[in-house]
Image 1: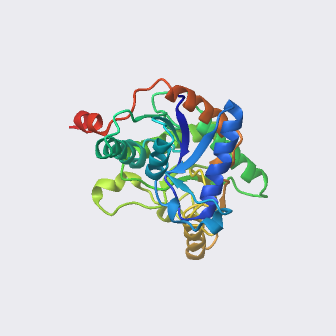
Image 2 (image 1 turned 90 degrees about the vertical axis):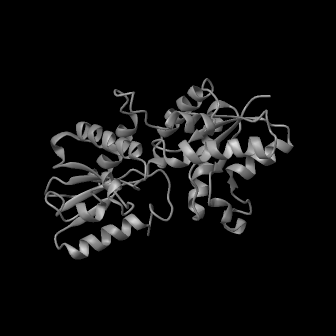
Length: 291
């Protein structure tokens, strides 16, 4: 039996995130001629089904166990993640091992395709180009007298490897945008308080209003889907609104989310194909390697 293919995100309590994931899974499935299931790792199962057109959101462990009852043992997970966050690199393989052991499910095989950005592929500018497209589209819609600065904003993370992806994309974005823009800098929406997480700085709220970011600023959204943080009325929008009130003369302009970019499907299709040849995930192997 062929692998059951899953397109997965971290999950959200906002219905619009699940609708976005379903839209992308449907479009990707139509491309490859196979069903692709929209399955969040966490959270989304708590959304009232009435807010999801009567269809409850699927979450990873519950979905995989249900498929077992149908005789499915092999799964291919395509992450809707920019980099190897803890959800993909730790939580998912841990839960796979728990299911194997607790259920006595020795045949369970889960492969995880690469994330959208691979830092080893230094000449791959595809995600940066999508970001640049959104920035240029936003800039073209504005009538600005000054060259704007660009703040590339991600969520913030307890894993430095994910921030490394943010910084890598900021460098690429700056190269693609050129001198038409005053300055391009990476930032994060939030961070943990301990000093060991200083790599998330600058936060968006600290960057806005600072030198080169005190007039016209385009906030380039390193987010894929709408939810509590991104999208209309989200945390990023609130941070921008507060910064404008605190800094007279500052105006922010937020770009579209990358889940809306048409070329995202090209990259997801490639990552899916790459995932078929990878070794199955194993939490125990990962922890042994890290120790």
